[in-house]
Length: 396
Image (cartoon, rainbow, N blue to C red; front, side, top):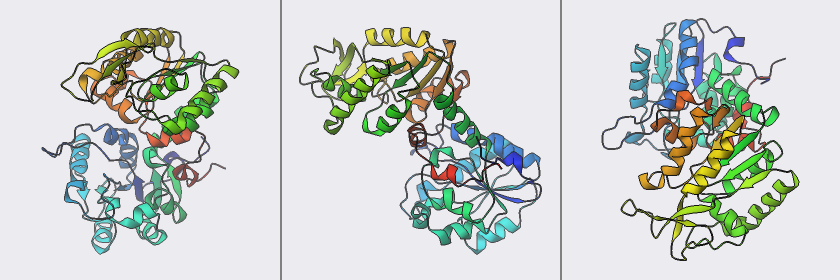
């Protein structure tokens, strides 16, 4: 990584605007955070700044309030959880700009932590408004971006603030760039990529970009239906992206040219409806009933995929194998997740719902790296220049 990091600057006594991603899942009934992994992911940078007597001003979004103040989307639960983890107070501001915020920042002492209110309560945030970015920048001396998960957005707090302050990466941002960049530049072989999730369209750029790096592609999830359709299988009532059938066919041709093995499901779990009340049945991919849809990969496919993963030195996984929010359609995803820690390989999970499964099974600390990226990971691995990374200062 050729970007400056928080290690490269003197932070003592300075006001550090630290962009984090505290967009954590919350139980709407209890108001409690159900997964604090994104908060924990920011701890190395936060603790580093505390230890060096910086004045830490945390910036984050939460949910999609669309420029309005939504009470259920305040950041107070995240602030409370951070305070519990740090064993020290975390002050909360009721806005992210304005006189009261300026006053709260002025009251900070070295080592103090202040969490500003949800940036997306202001429509200017997502519009990348320069005046809004400048107002926030006026609260700090240095900008540190540790929110890789939103680095693909040209929002005011992601790329705009960097126009007005020295801008460097936090430790999570650095790790994301180095780890995902290493997949593209120098992976250990055999390198196997496991892809799932609902849509091919979300992953086309990444699939094309990673094709020349991998030895084997394993395709599951809803996107497998599109690939199977491209091979003239009848996939019943499965959701198929009609406009990407040709794309899937072209990707398979490209793989053949590059001597990349693509493995599609040989059997699948199908169901008439996506419902927790049905069990579904496992059928061969050439015997999918016309009135049923693919909801998971089958047991034989799990065995085939596991055999391939066991041969690998590098594994990258993005996307669940089935509709994993329904327990009986999550079995294949869980089986593969439980295999990862047993592999003699570098294992990288690409964020989103896949990361949630890893966390729910208590496997996060047994995986080489679990990305916080989601969409940012996909765009980065697709060869895109992410605004949040481009905005950071280069090392000379």
